[in-house]
Length: 474
Image 1: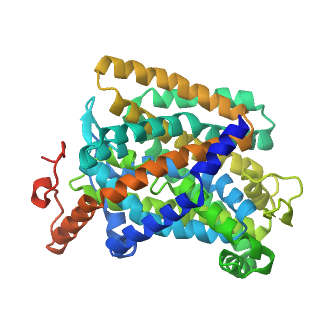
Image 2: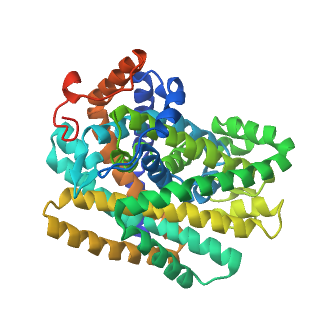
Image 3: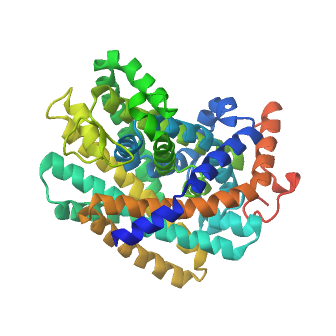
């Protein structure tokens, strides 16, 4: 099993995908005139405007749902893995892909809003929908839908439950099988309630978990404030091969920084647009801007907090290209949430392991909620007949919970490798699609900007800017 997964990973995560992600983010940043800088203020404004309707959730609920998918094990275990495999310089490349990825996130979320539909009385959308209605290539849309069902329904959930179970075992000594049962019992209560219950849970859990984590991170960083300049210098020097100890890891820094950056912030992956499509807004570009900000929230806030904590406390190892350790500060400790646990333990003995276990539970649990919603959205896309669709969705709920339990008792290396396959599959299909569909998304941005200049609250009329096949915007 491990050999097959690693073989697929080697193909999917070749350097070509790394280059494609960076180039796509740069392209969209340029053509939108770096909206991630120009429009930060209205990103936040639009996040708190609007109310939910019978068909859709509020912009903030859609933001929280997308963040719940983005803020997960990638922010704790993923950052640690990036440092362990690519050195401190990998953190810089996580920042870079987040900055550039905000442009990609805007485009894919805006497209999801433009081409969303009403299915079973609720807004549904995402890459499968905009590929079919925008590109008018049905088979390619089905390919993405299948890739997403495999990715978010089969490959990715195990990483989240595996990280929860392992951190709880480290902190409390609880058997992973018992943790797995508790996780699926709680998750089942939420996912059987549909999108409204999922988004409501995300709305309350996401701000609580993220703010609590950042507060503790700030305390640890302030206690080691004298080391912060050295840590930042190490990140930048290592990112470009100027740090002698990590001179031979430049390629690994870029590769692991981009890979873990995409896994964490999901920009270009195609998952967050499904959450964006669920929002009730007056203009598609509004939610596009909100989703662009969620990339910043994930990487620049949460991932950075983890990285600086680990580096200033020195609780990390770095493997060289030949497998030997370039840095081994934690002998016998595998890359993962343990790095963060040791970082907090260095200041607050007896607290770090417990806190990270609790934080990781919330991070990973909300991510699994989002993964399930993404899976359901693509089942709803493929199966049109109402009764058959409902049966398939209920069957998927049971399968999903089974996958989550299996992940809790599976080895960490297998879980992460399967997750990378899932992310890579979706990214390849979606990035090609949004590059081909950039014209309507950019036209939508220009329309919003022109209305804002006139002092209006932007309202979208698809026919005014020549966009067709927009079921919800006629």
